[in-house]
Image (cartoon, rainbow, N blue to C red; front, side):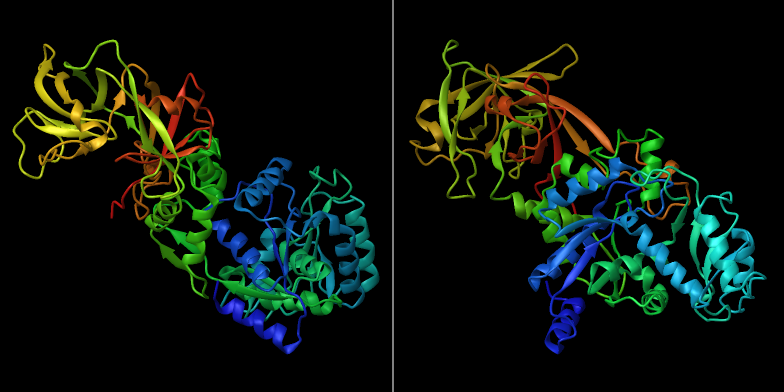
Length: 540
């Protein structure tokens, strides 16, 4: 994993600046993680691993309004699924006392004050990118008054939003983040770990650098939008007199075409009922991708392949699907499934006979095991593999008076086409050649291609789910919900070969000539459900 941050880490070790690399992944437990978070996870863990360092998982639970223990457990499970075990699991809220003490230190140094301005007033006082801000009328309160007010804030004497603790830096700074930023705000709420012990909570820009310092983080990696926050990060670490000095490094965000990368929009989808939940197979959440059938290895390889730089980038969603195909190519067992069933009757095969033929579970993997597939006088093929009209030379499937090979079985020839009253083809009468068993023992004649089938006497009923992007057009002027794809999920009912009756949730297969599929979490032996993860080939 070569990138500019790895180079910096190597230089820091070589120069003696650090003798160990320590990174952290600090999610806020207010939502399920999505594919965009995977870049931060994989980058932090993989870079630390490159240097035999370590990575902490730290839950940034300093904003209790939308945080929940449900998200904490989901994030832990996501990391486990991706194959990462953090060196330590910390919670930002566990540092509340130490963070409070650092705020006291700033007040005593004359670098923080209690302000009575409302959030709206503070915004007006802050100025603009071209105009300096102006000082708060409460900026010159004495150290003693500030200490008293801050203690009373902690004791719960003031209502929400009545007062804030602000850093005293420079209201004329060209960097608006340095114009006396808020360090603490008042929120009377039950915290998922601290209960009602605290009613003042540190702001991210104050808590985060301190937590990094407390844990001895050497390289604090974050996305590019925090670039202009770095000077405040350094100010906090320096003026709070932290023993260990971390440094922040920013990298570009990764955007993926046709993929929703906003926690707000994902929450909107769930709360509006447009999807079944965060683990809906169409969702780009890690739990949704996992349910659909994406593998941790594919996601990891995809993220690493996109590289890491100081600019935001957008890549095609097809890159992720290609990584998945590369990962499953040798791993996934081959099976046969029919999604548009057309009945085939073998007229010269005994009605009371079922034979089993041995085939490879993966013809592309020389170490693959084998399985038995059944064959009888009644089969199902895919209706798209039959053409009644006389085909052209490019047609390499079944047609009237044309011979094809059934995968792993025999040559068959269509002799008669049965239709219903509306003229729809409902059955084919065919004959088979017993000398062509498993494609061997025949003369120089060649079949018109190879198609798959399932034995109608032993096959299992199954439901197949197909997915398209949730968004119709990312550049549309329509509102988010108006721009959703009404055909983002489609359902087909058909049959699968007998062996798939034992498929378990999360089992993955390549259905011959169709694509890669995953047994859904709601699937049972009596109600088989398979999610198509990705087609066999790129649609690009």
